[in-house]
Amino acid sequence: MTMDALERYVREMSTPQGEALSWVERQSWLRTSHGRQVSGPEVGALLRQFVQLLRPRQVLEIGTFSGYSTLWMASALPEGGRIDTLEINDEMEDLIRAGFARAGLADRIRLHIGDALDILPALTGPYELVFIDADKRDYVAYYQAVFDLVAPGGLIVADNVLWDGKVCAEEPPRDQQTRGILAFNDLVAGDTRVDNFILPLRDGLNIIRKK
Ligand SMILES: C[S@@+](CC[C@H](N)C(=O)[O-])C[C@H]1O[C@@H](n2cnc3c(N)ncnc32)[C@H](O)[C@@H]1O
Image (tube, rainbow, N blue to C red):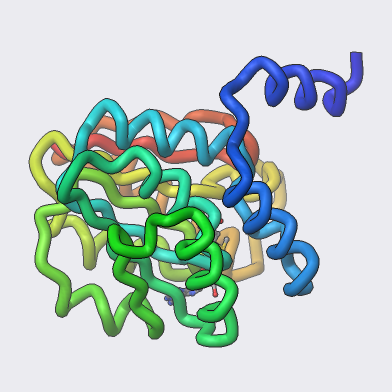
């Protein structure tokens, strides 16, 4: 059986993502040159499950892109719950806001356009769930900037931590993105304030629970 057939089976046997998410996923490919940045339904459904389990008052996302993962999380928020989502690329704003409106979830989401490292110091926690999915060079900086904003028992989930397998390359990595991911995974593995494990789903998720 090919991976494509397995992937299709997994999707068919899981709750469908619904019209608005399908629309955002499609528009991400049609309207941008980097549609593969959307995290996909498996990561989206996992994030939604975390929201359903944690019932957070506040969620933080670093790296909105088209708003696909934002909508998965927003769809499961309890009454009064809010998401702050941070995106540096202002060209994405129209598509992001159109998706939020289409899903009927705009009132639960605060979109911040700008560099996360400038915006984070002005945010007030506590956040019970943080999803890090922006510039791989800056994962350590995002982690350090958000840590005190995370509630005890809260989760930090970081995407792409296997970086297409480059984290295990035999040659020492020269590119800054691989180095950024390696430094981040090392930092988390040695951080006694958290428990973590790497889930090898898609490009790898570091699931980090603050003690
Ligand atoms: C992989 S995409 C996010 C995908 C999205 N979370 C999803 O799953 O659909 C990464 C996004 O992070 C944004 N980004 C990169 N550096 C950033 C920064 N310093 N602050 C805020 N956003 C940033 C990029 O512009 C890009 O849209």
